[in-house]
Image 1 (cartoon, one colour):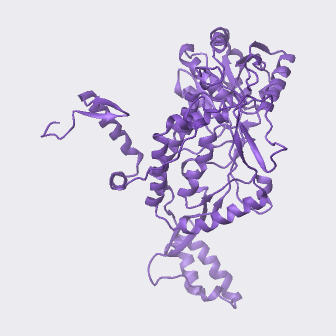
Image 2 (image 1 turned 30 degrees about the horizontal axis):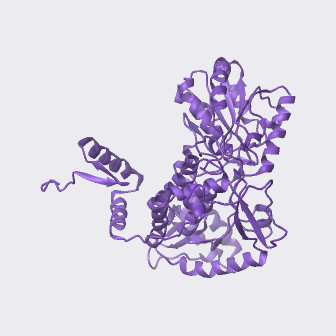
Image 3 (image 1 turned 90 degrees about the vertical axis):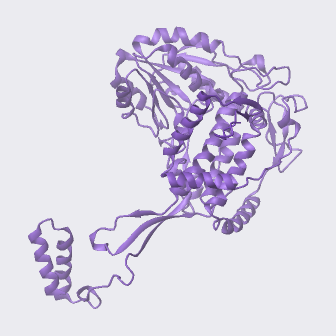
Length: 554
């Protein structure tokens, strides 16, 4: 180490010594500089850094069982078919690995009484939790983050075992998104939940008005099964930071009986558009990732691929061999598999029946099936559906409007390279979650995107909305309503309460005698008329007459 600069010659990163050469130092400085604008002010940035430096982050110790620690950690033969309820074990739910159909264990099947008891316990705890400081809440999230970043592999393994996805898909969809969620909430959550001051207008200029965000109390969350770790912890992160206790989520029909607010994200049929001026070698990888990430079981996965007429044939010739080359199988080194796969299994067996019905309907109505289109029986008894490419999709086919939620690339030809026709085809769908457009001109891409009826849009990219956790996540139409993520999502965990207080001590609103009870009929209406004209008549002469009226009738 140089005694003058006090900068070490090297540092240890993830067990590897990294030499601090000038390029490395420049890269570190660039990362630091780029992180500064993400906070509202330099003071906020320094304050947060200081908190991070002086606060000790506890370590969570969670013993890992064999299923979490080793690929071959689950013993037992596969069963023929998953049955969640075992008649011999009432009051429990059985859990299976969908790729091997091995029994993972069982959990209690909670009754209504059990859920009520948990809610009451959470309600009691929330009373104290609501009084914690933001620094204390950040410490809890940092403790979770510390565990996550030091246990990436076992977390991915557990997710893979629970949902049948490859480990890399688990890392991208479960771990990376969770870490970014925590980072964003810790960096910006306190700012987003600060009082929001509002203009009062001239009549109430002596008042201060603001909105404050108060914890609801106990939040209920029903999370989907496609990302078991992230979907489990995602809403806990937002909920507890906003001062709530989190236990589960009531659907709209049940919540309506008790006038409870709901946030619903109900899936999508997301379009990806390839305009005629794209370079196929640049966009094909995005089509592959968009359709086959997590075996297509993504709410914002690509379910409709719109390819312009002039590049359609070349795209088909390019994409079909790539999809055929995807390696599908058990994603862990167990049950005879080496775990070296690109595409895993389906979580739900019945979903494959839904996919098959949509594929069969499309083929019957004239669609072209290029590959796949059926269960992968060579991997039985695991729940695998072959990576599929189908083209010639038209609006009369069910597959153009109903959610697939599986490993299917559904291709629509855009006639005459027409942007207008493309927009029309895209919007002819009951869903509206995300959307993306790839083209040489960002101006053109934005022009197309602005006409797509969806809750989210990206130009020349896919899926990055969710990695920018300052953005709200959600859709329109049958994709649901309201938002999670971003300030909108964090505030959705709160009661928005409008507050009005005196701006100047001793200066308060009083009721003028002409409109106070008992109202003087001869003065009340003329006085009120003068009051309206004073504040809202745009003519200076009209305002002068209003002042004279207030004097006369006041």
